Amino acid sequence: MTVRTCLPWPDKRLRTKAEDVAEITDEIRAIWDDMIDTMEAMPGVGLAGPQIGVMLRLAVVDGSTERGKAVRLANPEILHSSIELREHDEASPNLPGVSAKVKRPRAVTVKFLNEQGMIDRRDFVGIEATSVQHQIDHLNGRMYFDRLSKVKRDMLLRKAKKQG
Image (tube, rainbow, N blue to C red; front, top):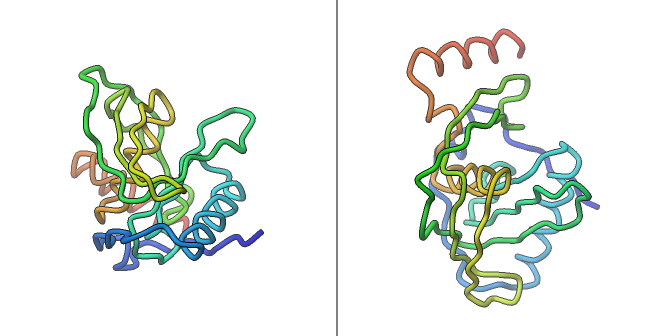
């Protein structure tokens, strides 16, 4: 089990778009394993490569109650989003101690490379839909608080700074 350190905000890598994964190798699978260990240690429902300084389009998501059902995604891309939104309290280990309610589509269909290197397509609903969208934001250099109004974002960042 290797739990990796999450980059502290405002590390510039958290604002950098991650690179596409060319192929699924044993090295990529080992990174996914570390990401799952890191996610479980938080505990969280997802993690993206850039959060631990791996600048590749890799993410893991596990919204199951019993855990151990993590979905490994490389180069995830949203193909379809539901019109219906869902509000959820989101947070990030890169900016600990604060969270905010964010509205996102309740369900999404995502295309990605799976562990075998095959193109896969999967529907995510509820907490897993929220998490996969949150991780894709990270892969694009965005943080969840970028989805807040300027006033709410400034308040959240001030609160985080006070706690740090």
